[in-house]
Image (cartoon, rainbow, N blue to C red; front, side, top):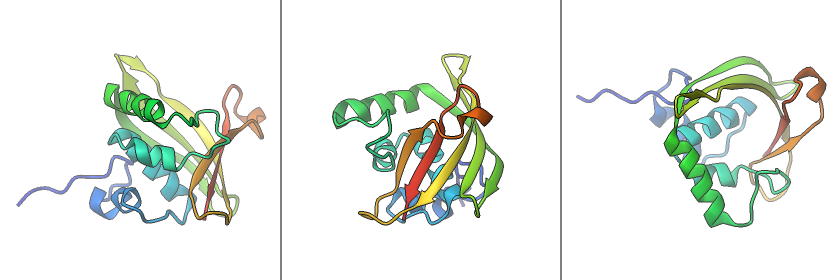
Length: 149
């Protein structure tokens, strides 16, 4: 009997019962689900999921999908996604504050960020945009807004 693989998002759930559902098409209904599934997509080298959940207004969005996909994949392959630590969440305010622990070429690329998530109804897509709103509480960091339906 083989041991089930834990999800890279550090939820302590098995991947098959956690982020895999979103990677295979289920829409995240909560801010934390979207955050965790994006982290797992980076860890598992699923660039298409990252691209699909990135809003065109995001500065990292690119119309050159081949180059963008390659860039995400190279980052994922050359990085070790050590841990996702959720520091705070608020369903009411639709926010998630987290630290992503990432190592690349023996360099610590870890960062802490607060994300703001907003529900919207458009084409049914899940998307992420960067903006500077609220950056005073996190100097030198972008706040992220995730739009999801």
